[in-house]
Image (cartoon, rainbow, N blue to C red; front, side):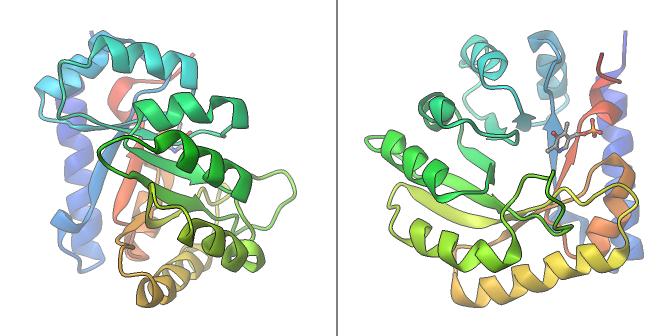
Length: 224
Ligand SMILES: *Cc1c(COP(=O)(O)O)cnc(C)c1O
């Protein structure tokens, strides 16, 4: 059996050593445990080790796990995968965060489906900093228009930006995200989250001000 508790402790250590190297306080960085494809029993083990924020990428699978674990009401569920518009209702009703918003249509649908709930849906906009055709995320040039749409969405709370830099991305791409984040923070006081960094690029992300790292396999083991 994989010792999930030990893995979480290892990852927490890596986060604090990365923060130390970056001259940052480790308390500024939240660990999001990415549990996609992993069974509910593993999430429970992570929960028993004190982990409370979990990331999922596949709606149907996630909804089953969220429903099974609904007695653990202090879990915050984060949707981090690509969003199809026909899934926005399920996402808006089961998650408290969505990191992967990259177009106005999805934002408007999530906003509609969130109405009537006690709390707004926390959102991050996924930015495509590499500018490649294949990657999801809004291009930096298109960000102002998306921000204007979101300003009209009362059931969404804009918390920040998310990025998945390409493999072997340089420190400069992470710093581009940081600069964008800082400039938006001046305009939008609700922004406090820069969702950036996975197992392989955690140091570069933390150097560039990441406040939330998304870690899957280092906690739950490799996926099939
Ligand atoms: C799967 C996934 C992760 C976690 O990746 P690992 O390599 O397992 O740490 C992080 N972010 C996103 C958007 C993902 O889809």
